[in-house]
Image 1: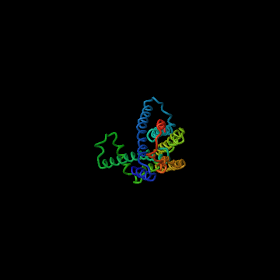
Image 2: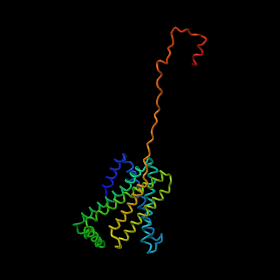
Image 3: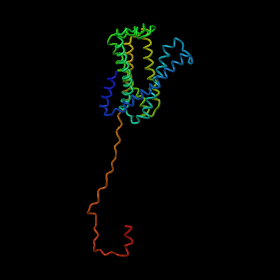
Image 4: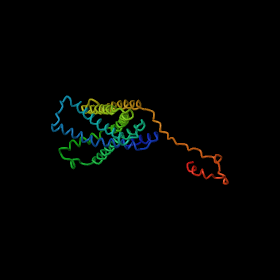
Length: 285
């Protein structure tokens, strides 16, 4: 989850003959989007909990939550991406540059989640041979023991699901970056709205399937298969939007006039008689 985006970025930079700048800008737009996105979701949840916003009917919740979470993710990430193109990456107006921007945006997300997975693993290793009753309150002990048991009893290949999901998600993030880029290259802001919709729909489907999985109707492997299918659609969109790279501006260098040849110069004879009446005219010649 950490090495995959780094390797992809290094490969594309070498292939496209571009630097790391757009990758870092894309990564910064994701981080900035989460600075607003995470507190917004927390505030929204709190408003529903205290009753300021009315609770939706129980039958709507399996659909309501995915739609709201998908829209919040789409709005914050795509608007942050748009701001990145408008203010930081003004030179990113080609397909290749949009791809690098997307690698940074999706790559930093993958790296952050990979870091959290590693942190969880280190915690589980440190707690594996410790008596949990000595460090965990009694009312939380049973839940902690169940979590530890579920973590260590899972098959080894289950731990790779996170990496598989990032493998599918990074191309989709690249696709969204190229979609937003069309708002600048085609001068049509509606492309940003399209990116928000596509992002919201994809996240809503993923959140809905995760909720279904908790009811044991779908396996996590089937869910990853659906995410992979959505990623394939994203790749098709990505290459459909591919355009020829703009030709660089050719600088026109003026050619200096050839120097005057010595044959064209007529020397003044020293013994030539000077007419005093014409001396006043010589200063204008």
